[in-house]
Length: 93
Image (cartoon, rainbow, N blue to C red; front, side, top):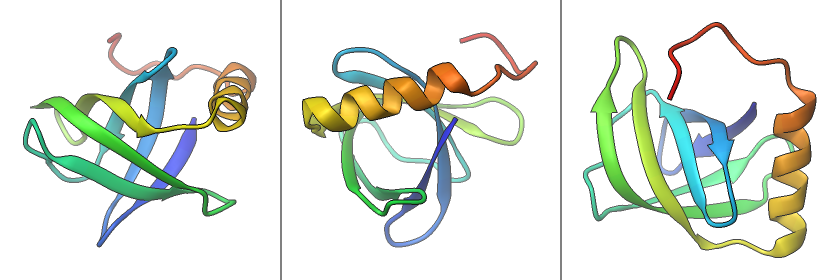
């Protein structure tokens, strides 16, 4: 999973992506319609996600949204990172 340091504070993990949509597990809530801003770990590349839904599932918040600005190179890098990371035994999304 790819980690994201949230602005101004917090942390999220990208658990699923496709062409322009993303699912994250975050330590704080974001209301639908808001824009999540953060920096990918460890590179610090900036990402923005327009949140479409936010639900609490135990400890993490499950955020669904679409990337606002995402280059093809960064998308391919994220996809490669998620493929290399073993899946967890967490809830299926």
